[in-house]
Length: 213
Image (cartoon, rainbow, N blue to C red; front, side, top):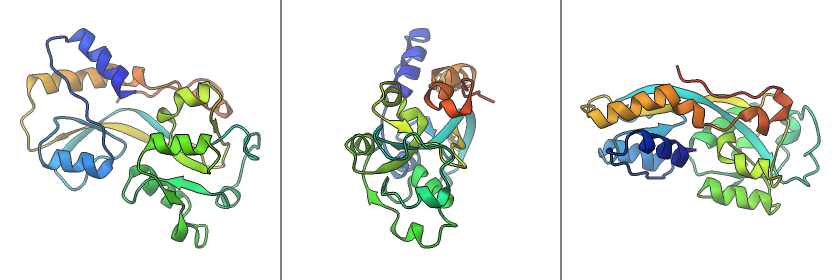
Protein backbone atom coordinates (compact mmCIF):
# COMPACT_ATOMS: atom_id res chain seq x y z
CA UNK A 1 0.00 0.00 0.00
CA UNK A 2 2.95 2.37 0.52
CA UNK A 3 3.40 3.33 -3.16
CA UNK A 4 -0.31 4.18 -3.49
CA UNK A 5 -0.18 6.15 -0.26
CA UNK A 6 2.84 8.10 -1.49
CA UNK A 7 1.19 8.77 -4.82
CA UNK A 8 -1.83 10.18 -3.03
CA UNK A 9 0.35 12.43 -0.93
CA UNK A 10 2.37 13.66 -3.90
CA UNK A 11 -0.81 14.62 -5.77
CA UNK A 12 -1.71 16.89 -2.86
CA UNK A 13 1.84 18.15 -2.35
CA UNK A 14 3.72 18.03 -5.68
CA UNK A 15 6.32 20.45 -4.33
CA UNK A 16 7.62 17.92 -1.77
CA UNK A 17 10.27 15.46 -2.98
CA UNK A 18 9.71 11.91 -1.74
CA UNK A 19 11.75 8.75 -2.05
CA UNK A 20 10.65 5.28 -0.97
CA UNK A 21 13.12 2.72 0.38
CA UNK A 22 12.03 -0.88 1.03
CA UNK A 23 13.78 -2.95 3.66
CA UNK A 24 13.26 -5.54 6.34
CA UNK A 25 12.97 -4.59 9.99
CA UNK A 26 16.71 -4.64 10.70
CA UNK A 27 17.49 -2.52 7.65
CA UNK A 28 14.76 -0.02 8.52
CA UNK A 29 15.96 0.33 12.10
CA UNK A 30 19.53 0.78 10.86
CA UNK A 31 18.35 3.53 8.49
CA UNK A 32 16.64 5.28 11.41
CA UNK A 33 19.82 4.96 13.49
CA UNK A 34 21.90 6.50 10.71
CA UNK A 35 19.37 9.26 9.95
CA UNK A 36 19.11 7.90 6.40
CA UNK A 37 15.32 8.16 6.40
CA UNK A 38 12.92 10.71 7.84
CA UNK A 39 9.87 8.54 8.45
CA UNK A 40 9.45 4.77 8.64
CA UNK A 41 6.19 2.87 8.21
CA UNK A 42 6.49 -0.09 10.58
CA UNK A 43 4.41 -2.81 12.19
CA UNK A 44 6.25 -2.39 15.50
CA UNK A 45 8.11 0.78 16.55
CA UNK A 46 11.87 0.41 16.94
CA UNK A 47 13.21 0.11 20.49
CA UNK A 48 16.89 0.36 19.56
CA UNK A 49 16.70 4.07 18.80
CA UNK A 50 14.71 6.97 20.36
CA UNK A 51 11.52 7.39 18.33
CA UNK A 52 8.08 8.93 18.37
CA UNK A 53 5.49 6.55 16.94
CA UNK A 54 1.92 7.27 15.85
CA UNK A 55 -0.72 4.74 14.80
CA UNK A 56 -2.31 5.34 11.40
CA UNK A 57 -4.20 2.08 10.81
CA UNK A 58 -4.93 -1.51 11.74
CA UNK A 59 -2.48 -4.20 10.63
CA UNK A 60 -3.97 -7.72 10.47
CA UNK A 61 -1.64 -10.72 10.26
CA UNK A 62 -2.93 -13.94 8.71
CA UNK A 63 -1.93 -17.41 7.55
CA UNK A 64 -2.05 -17.98 3.79
CA UNK A 65 -2.08 -21.05 1.58
CA UNK A 66 -2.58 -21.93 -2.09
CA UNK A 67 -6.25 -22.36 -3.12
CA UNK A 68 -5.88 -26.15 -3.50
CA UNK A 69 -4.48 -26.65 0.01
CA UNK A 70 -6.37 -29.32 2.03
CA UNK A 71 -7.23 -26.73 4.70
CA UNK A 72 -8.37 -24.03 2.26
CA UNK A 73 -12.07 -24.67 2.89
CA UNK A 74 -11.75 -25.71 6.54
CA UNK A 75 -13.22 -23.58 9.32
CA UNK A 76 -11.89 -22.90 12.81
CA UNK A 77 -8.58 -24.69 12.28
CA UNK A 78 -6.92 -25.25 15.64
CA UNK A 79 -3.50 -23.92 16.51
CA UNK A 80 -2.28 -27.46 17.05
CA UNK A 81 -3.45 -28.50 13.58
CA UNK A 82 -1.94 -25.53 11.77
CA UNK A 83 1.33 -26.10 13.67
CA UNK A 84 1.69 -29.42 11.79
CA UNK A 85 2.04 -27.56 8.49
CA UNK A 86 5.26 -26.61 6.71
CA UNK A 87 5.83 -22.85 7.20
CA UNK A 88 7.75 -20.43 5.01
CA UNK A 89 9.09 -17.67 7.26
CA UNK A 90 11.04 -14.43 7.30
CA UNK A 91 14.48 -13.97 8.83
CA UNK A 92 15.05 -13.78 12.62
CA UNK A 93 14.03 -10.42 14.05
CA UNK A 94 11.34 -9.66 11.49
CA UNK A 95 8.03 -8.43 12.88
CA UNK A 96 5.93 -11.20 11.37
CA UNK A 97 8.32 -13.93 12.51
CA UNK A 98 8.27 -12.62 16.09
CA UNK A 99 4.46 -12.60 16.05
CA UNK A 100 4.38 -16.17 14.67
CA UNK A 101 6.82 -17.33 17.35
CA UNK A 102 4.56 -15.84 20.02
CA UNK A 103 1.46 -17.44 18.47
CA UNK A 104 3.03 -20.92 18.35
CA UNK A 105 5.00 -20.64 21.61
CA UNK A 106 2.59 -22.84 23.57
CA UNK A 107 2.83 -25.70 21.03
CA UNK A 108 5.63 -27.88 22.48
CA UNK A 109 8.80 -27.84 20.39
CA UNK A 110 7.21 -26.05 17.43
CA UNK A 111 9.31 -22.89 17.39
CA UNK A 112 12.54 -24.88 17.66
CA UNK A 113 12.19 -25.64 13.94
CA UNK A 114 9.83 -22.94 12.72
CA UNK A 115 10.26 -23.40 8.97
CA UNK A 116 12.22 -22.45 5.86
CA UNK A 117 13.56 -18.88 5.86
CA UNK A 118 13.04 -16.60 2.87
CA UNK A 119 14.31 -13.06 2.42
CA UNK A 120 11.19 -11.17 1.35
CA UNK A 121 7.41 -11.23 1.47
CA UNK A 122 7.31 -11.42 -2.33
CA UNK A 123 9.44 -14.57 -2.34
CA UNK A 124 7.24 -16.10 0.35
CA UNK A 125 4.06 -15.31 -1.61
CA UNK A 126 5.46 -16.88 -4.77
CA UNK A 127 6.59 -19.97 -2.84
CA UNK A 128 3.17 -20.39 -1.22
CA UNK A 129 1.45 -20.06 -4.61
CA UNK A 130 3.83 -22.73 -5.92
CA UNK A 131 2.72 -25.09 -3.16
CA UNK A 132 5.93 -25.13 -1.13
CA UNK A 133 4.21 -24.41 2.17
CA UNK A 134 2.01 -21.97 4.07
CA UNK A 135 3.01 -18.62 5.56
CA UNK A 136 2.15 -16.11 8.26
CA UNK A 137 2.10 -12.68 6.68
CA UNK A 138 0.61 -9.20 6.72
CA UNK A 139 -2.84 -9.25 5.10
CA UNK A 140 -1.97 -5.93 3.49
CA UNK A 141 0.78 -7.56 1.40
CA UNK A 142 -1.46 -10.20 -0.21
CA UNK A 143 -4.53 -8.16 -1.23
CA UNK A 144 -4.00 -8.57 -4.98
CA UNK A 145 -3.27 -12.30 -4.76
CA UNK A 146 -6.31 -13.12 -2.61
CA UNK A 147 -8.65 -11.04 -4.77
CA UNK A 148 -7.30 -12.85 -7.85
CA UNK A 149 -7.79 -16.24 -6.19
CA UNK A 150 -4.11 -17.14 -6.22
CA UNK A 151 -3.90 -17.27 -2.42
CA UNK A 152 -6.41 -17.97 0.34
CA UNK A 153 -6.44 -16.89 3.96
CA UNK A 154 -6.90 -19.87 6.27
CA UNK A 155 -9.55 -19.67 8.99
CA UNK A 156 -7.33 -20.37 11.99
CA UNK A 157 -8.62 -19.98 15.54
CA UNK A 158 -7.04 -16.87 17.04
CA UNK A 159 -6.46 -15.28 13.64
CA UNK A 160 -6.19 -12.68 12.35
CA UNK A 161 -3.73 -11.29 14.84
CA UNK A 162 -4.44 -7.59 15.13
CA UNK A 163 -1.47 -5.28 15.12
CA UNK A 164 -1.14 -1.67 14.00
CA UNK A 165 0.77 0.32 11.41
CA UNK A 166 2.96 3.07 12.85
CA UNK A 167 4.52 6.21 11.48
CA UNK A 168 7.94 6.32 13.16
CA UNK A 169 10.36 9.26 13.41
CA UNK A 170 13.45 9.92 15.47
CA UNK A 171 12.43 11.73 18.67
CA UNK A 172 15.83 13.43 18.84
CA UNK A 173 15.58 14.71 15.27
CA UNK A 174 14.05 18.03 14.29
CA UNK A 175 10.83 17.63 12.33
CA UNK A 176 11.01 19.48 9.03
CA UNK A 177 7.92 21.10 7.50
CA UNK A 178 7.87 18.37 4.84
CA UNK A 179 7.96 15.63 7.50
CA UNK A 180 5.20 17.33 9.47
CA UNK A 181 3.06 17.60 6.33
CA UNK A 182 3.47 13.90 5.50
CA UNK A 183 2.83 12.87 9.11
CA UNK A 184 -0.38 14.91 9.12
CA UNK A 185 -1.42 13.23 5.86
CA UNK A 186 -0.83 9.80 7.41
CA UNK A 187 -2.93 10.66 10.45
CA UNK A 188 -5.79 12.00 8.34
CA UNK A 189 -5.78 9.70 5.33
CA UNK A 190 -3.27 6.88 5.82
CA UNK A 191 -5.90 4.30 6.77
CA UNK A 192 -7.79 5.01 3.54
CA UNK A 193 -4.94 3.42 1.56
CA UNK A 194 -5.00 0.14 3.48
CA UNK A 195 -6.84 -2.72 1.73
CA UNK A 196 -10.37 -3.50 2.92
CA UNK A 197 -9.69 -6.51 5.10
CA UNK A 198 -13.26 -7.81 5.16
CA UNK A 199 -13.06 -8.39 1.39
CA UNK A 200 -9.92 -10.48 1.88
CA UNK A 201 -11.15 -12.34 4.96
CA UNK A 202 -14.88 -13.07 4.57
CA UNK A 203 -14.99 -15.06 7.84
CA UNK A 204 -15.00 -11.69 9.62
CA UNK A 205 -18.20 -10.49 7.99
CA UNK A 206 -18.44 -6.77 7.05
CA UNK A 207 -15.51 -4.94 5.58
CA UNK A 208 -13.03 -3.56 8.08
CA UNK A 209 -10.73 -0.68 7.31
CA UNK A 210 -7.89 0.56 9.50
CA UNK A 211 -8.49 3.75 11.39
CA UNK A 212 -5.85 6.26 12.42
CA UNK A 213 -5.84 7.44 16.01
